[in-house]
Length: 263
Image 1 (tube, rainbow, N blue to C red):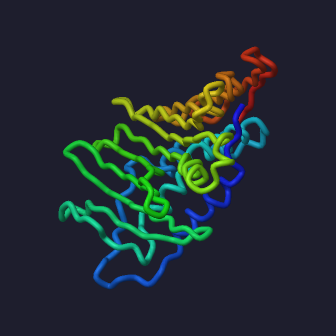
Image 2: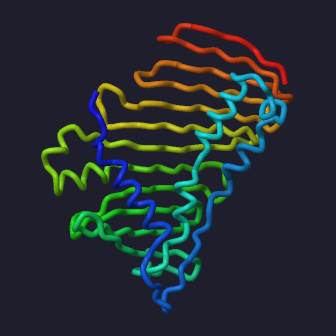
């Protein structure tokens, strides 16, 4: 299996720092706060029955922890307001659409970020691109949601780290693969939330490293499945509206252990 470049971590931290720091603001450019999604992390977490959340059973708590991890969109929400120092490079309408740009130095080069918010008659769209010096812009965040709130997706593409080292450190790129975090959901007419978090890669052997599939019913009952690299089912949890539930652990798609908990 190919390994993601060991330089990914410092690069990712550099990106995060640009969200919370910046140079002096240009008074002519009022910084926007782009709208978030109608479906929120809090809405997902709040649907979990109190009996499950407060259970002392270790497997029930593992289920809750997995849901909270899969529904963690904090990296996206921390990006909804460009940092001070960002400048407006396009303004498409009076509804808040447009593109904002800011830069930060990194290892003798310049990383430039372009954050765009767009709106059509049916959906909202967010895109963040990264550019190294004068190279091609590379998508980092792509997100969209239907205006009626029934579907949406956030996609983080960490392949920009590979592009950086391809440009400036050719010898490291051979072992570098692209990674994607993809959060997607839909809400059906009955109010059932179908939510998926996938950690994909460009590795031909393992198209993804992990995947969570969550179903939440209006009464709080639901199921959670976790799949590991190679398509193996690893965990299955299910619970009722009171928080009573059961769990199954698998090894190579065969049941390894199972049990229940009581709220």
